[in-house]
Length: 158
Image (cartoon, rainbow, N blue to C red):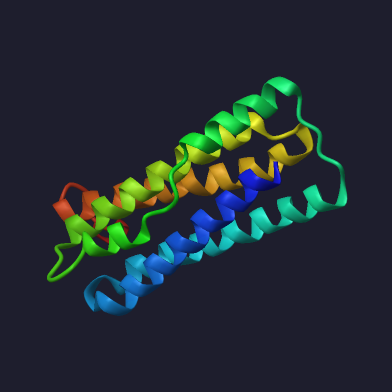
């Protein structure tokens, strides 16, 4: 259990670092990247709470959950932050940056959905909180993309 939560912490830290670096490099898009970096910080707080809870109590998984967890950990690739960064070299259109963010947020959502299915009952509310934030992040990206494309007008123009 601890390994999976540590993997989630690693994922969130790498993603936050990527967003923070892009906020500095992409001045025209910095506010967008800062919003998503802040969301990753909130996820990290929830994950660290879950880790402390795991450390304080003896979390026991069923044999079936333990096998599923080990199988899932074997399939989860380490975060390739450098691959994400290299995909944004040079001049970047807002659409490209938003697609990279969308891809990362979808990947995170899948990870947390699986994590939720594997954690013991007492950790589910914490992971549900992260899932809720992931859904909010996906909606935020979609909304920004719609505004960029002209399909959605800002609230003050409706």
